[in-house]
Length: 248
Image (cartoon, rainbow, N blue to C red):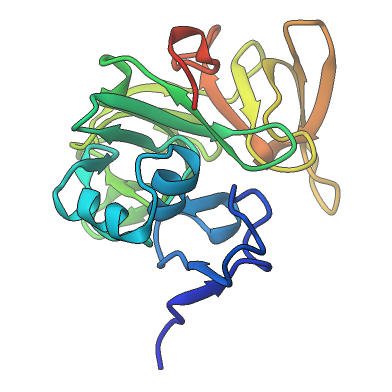
């Protein structure tokens, strides 16, 4: 029968900004780069979050005309899921946004400049040696990057961040998970908190490794290592607040 194409509004992810009881159904995300719990569909983004469309018909007109780009590529499926660090560009209005985790859960949009829309930060989830002895890394958004011949396996590590140009997927810079790096919490009860890494406590066995962050106010937060997303070596490589523009 294949995947269901509908999703009732009541059991939809809690962070979706939709009216639960006004209508019965909403769009179900297709299989894509982000899981349903940590993403939203282009329909929800354009209609409920940004307000560029009032109904599904207007959403489809925008998408089929090639007006909406995600990570530098036009996307035409209203059910396509977008998530953390994705770059959204609306050609007709000239607006560009980056999706970031929001405190208390969900996603928030930050307006970005012309320079920022040309790259994306991606966390390395795993690495492997493929046929031909070349190193391949898998990133948090599902993309795989095959590194040049001669690249040593020690060149990249899981949970570090790579700065990737979009859409050509060229690695510009590597941001290691280390003390002094600037990071944000992408999941868990401390989601959305950002600050400098002050300590990394590596453990083996049943107890997870932890990272301690210190925010601008001097408050310290401890979270699991797999929830940490490095966004800069000493300072953020991306805009994290609406100071450079207006977040919608």
